[in-house]
Image (cartoon, rainbow, N blue to C red):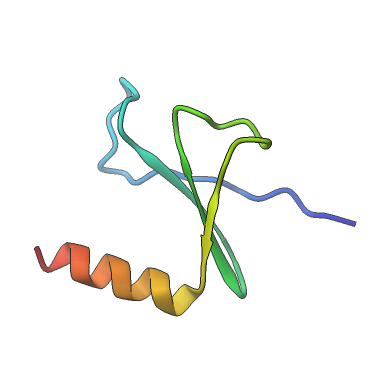
Length: 62
């Protein structure tokens, strides 16, 4: 049985849409998708939690 992912956007994202990412986390993976294409069949990028942490840490330092 598959459990549906719970997607969320950053609290910094505006309500007008546009260039936002949505993220869903699991114990061993972080799933990322374009908020303009939220259908379950749309493309996603899946990375490890350590890769996601490295990306967000690097992005926050900029």
